[in-house]
Length: 221
Image (cartoon, rainbow, N blue to C red):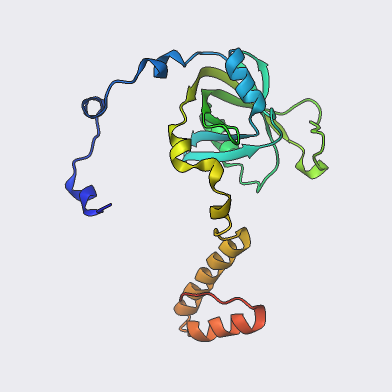
């Protein structure tokens, strides 16, 4: 894409601009939306081992990946979902957002399935009266709280995006990605490089020393 087009094109900042640009949605887009979890959508949630949780707060929006065994998101009734909050990196960005704004959106995915399920509603954080126990989970990984979601809208999204992405055919592509340790090493090197430059040190000498002592060879200065 020619990035100069971003500066030459006018911004679309009104709904009327969007309506003029896009066609009207087809009947399926509206017919598939309900305000509760029906039998068809229940089967999808019960089979999903992954959901993306979207929240919004004082520092802006956030999207968090949540996963578990198929059906780890519990359907309490047709208007209520229970999402266990298992310990992670303890940033708890989503939880902090929910304290300020209860509105949430969820995207359920099932490996091998081209359709996805979208849920919108309002959430509250619940601390159970007794500890939650999930079979197969180590004590340190047991959920400390629950996110109770009051469902307002549910609908499925067609296969277009997942088909175009070939999402379930990308095992080989994942092998080329940097590992978490590789990402952290790169970030640490950039921070060290900045500190060296502020202190008037030579980055080349530091890079050689890192390679000699730790076997780390950053490719760029």
